Image (cartoon, rainbow, N blue to C red; front, side):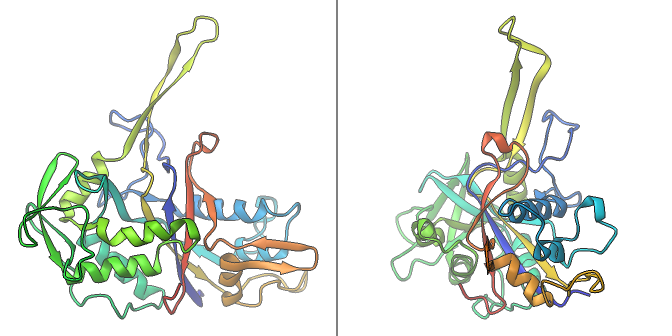
Length: 330
């Protein structure tokens, strides 16, 4: 039984390809999507495998802490399960080109409602979260309130009551709301990486944040993903080899995902070796902060870069991880 829970955010620094195999449409290699919503996701097995590889890459041999958290390697996988459970990574923010401010971070009420439910699942009830999530309709979007003079940079107009936002080729009426500001500030303070290179990104984030209608957000995530055409050249002819032209779909840089992490007490057979991690709390602490002991130092994942998904040798899938503590602090 899982005893400890937390949340891990993944901020895309390069495009991500969570491959779904061959596609039935014009994209040969699409990204993974939820069947019932069509929203992009990253399956849990890929996230957990990338996490394990991150830890194993820091040591020349198997370490008991890694075995406790992730389970034995495949040759001995029947010995016991790993203590760490990982959910699929869900979309929280999707970047879209903006006429004002270059680009915007978009989300929608459906995504925010599910995000709040997942926060409560891990034991964090955000005290500053608004009682009601703004729900735009039609051609309206919500942006942060401009009362304190540090307002939105993705909408403009003659006054606060007549703001326009243009995302890709679509124009919207933008309405400032204090609830939107509360949500933006919560994400800024509790989800964004805290390392020095992210200071400007964090400061600018509320001004780039917008809540759009659910169907509009779904359309942007379907049509706004990057589609790259790749080929393989025949060395002898200098032309594309037959059948070696294909398209790949990627989630763009600046996409923001999150995954729920669950930890049980390690299931290690203590007759064979002692547990390296005492309980579920120690498991999550190891994954977040790593460990240092005589002759060995392993960095945890909090505010560290991780590679997920396909096309690793092309620089795809570089993400910055950030953990949410149960208290919600940095």
